[in-house]
Image (cartoon, rainbow, N blue to C red; front, side, top):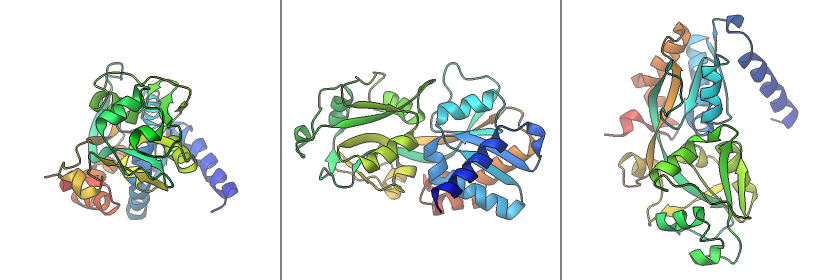
Length: 274
């Protein structure tokens, strides 16, 4: 599909998403987590429309944007790869629908194959700035971080909690801040010296290399069994009193059939984790 056609689809989606709620009771709108949208949400929305006739229009932009859109009434639901935090509206609820895992990605041409969590912490602390310090090529580490105007993305919030132990990344001359994890993944695809943290569910579909962590490669089976130990939940966020169509869509995602679909897309479903 060429860029002009994609632009038209995006424009139509943006118009519908920002239209009044009364636009159509047969249309559900959502925005948020790029990891979820690329990983499973776009696919399951198409399947739901095929089965029910109800249109589900979703756009990326990051968890922060999605939750903000939901809280302000611009959309019917949000996708998020972080749980509820201080400052979130009390009128919304987070419903886990799948699992993901943090992964570390580099350009396909980068010979680096594995990294340790201590080395990741050192990169984020500005202590490792060249791949030769990781026994790689002599080139700078260009760190891409997803940071929206409203704060850390879902991925970066997970990094702060799971890896940095509450700490913050140190910005260096080779730190690049971007609006969402989707853009981060695209930049690593195009940048030979690029390095970033992403979500397994979306990164596996990108033209990037996912690194082993302490010798363990991230794949669906190892994430589900917790052998790869950076697993984290994916959520759909809805109002505490959602409109009927939204509840029906979420119920479908949580159903046995919906979970089978998520698993078939290569994403770790709730039923995959015993």
